Image (cartoon, helix red, strand yellow):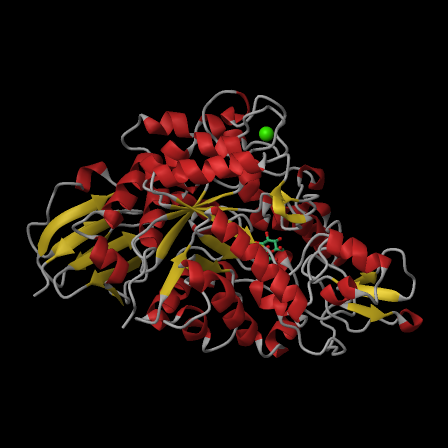
Length: 564
Ligand code: TEU
Ligand code: CA
């Protein structure tokens, strides 16, 4: 049996602070901006807010490169702002979850600076440093953002350090107990300050196999995918168990892991009753279609069989094991509406359909900023418009593979992380109301159509639909079935339909969506009690007179049925 926890019936929201709301006109979103929007989020039905990193950082990877874990970057605000945010959230019964980035820090962190000064000293042991004998790299792993994971240690010609991400993100050496102790101390410091928990970044990378292991090269750069090392690393469970018992467990903290793994026992190990985390993200849909060769080779995963297989696959495997976290998009992914919906569904109706299917799954729904108004990918005309290091690397990977500028840009447009990082669209004023200055990343041109202010007063808007959807999920009458009800796929042979039951002993809910171009009829298996939600005004109150329902193209209906 699954033990009940305080986060099970909650709805969560990810804020990417840099792009959320700027209060001082420097073009960068800030903590004061977050505080000023708490009521907006409360009204949306949000309980848990995950803040992407706001610690001191050179922002080489937008804050995922931390130079001081104990302070707030001045561009985001001050520690007083952070304390005020915690206080204001608490007074609204909301929880703040920070981003825990501990696979690596910044090359501007004092630990790394000291390691460069004295590689053989105490801080050298905080990192992976290896001798550069004849400039031969210790292994041939390719970093996530391109090139080898090794670079010369600054100030030295005979030593390398390892970075599985960008060269400004040196990997921390978790084999060193002193380092682990430092990390736990920092985690407890934040928990004592009042944060409710953490989203745990890139965590699978903390365990490495023998660093002198090379793999067969898989591209002309003679390097091998980092996935090889993830696959070979053994023993991460000891680290994660220790971290949990030294920190999270003592505080009843909520933790959600960014776990990419092919381990068959992953669900049990990470989110089972004795798992390392409270929850982990389901990335099944975002991984589908991916290629080791790079973005230019990724296949589009449009709603349909493949999306269904991915989303439902996790749900079926999950059973009663634990609590997954469901997403449509995040700061590393393009916008779900542009990515998953066929052209004819990239409109408010289709957007609501996608949202419904995701939010009512078993697990915690995580809404990414702007998803609730149906934000879409931007149009990118030149590579210079991008800021993201990953996108720029992927552009060059595509060019190196022989693609033209136009083709490489096309691949990046589809998958760029900057699609999710364009400023939040608040209103129809300049820069979508995000800033009075110059935004750090361009605003999507469609902000005059898609923005919070316009949608707020339109009862049929995506925003008001999301409010109803989250309210339904959390309503006293249905929160039990949506949190704990069994997930049962249904109408699996009707290929344009994505449908499932959520079911407890006393309640049966049917969520059914037609993502096809044509209308489709379905025979209900149980008598209808009532329609709980619909994305088409006409259908809202017309109960079927017999047991047949017709779903228009892009229509989603949520029924309460008899349990029988
Ligand atoms: O992402 C980890 C990760 O695996 C990403 O490289 C992911 O594969 C990629 O972004 C997909 O395009 C986390 C953070 O979410 C990401 O923003 C950071 O850049 C990364 O860690 C390094 O901290
Ligand atoms: Ca600002």
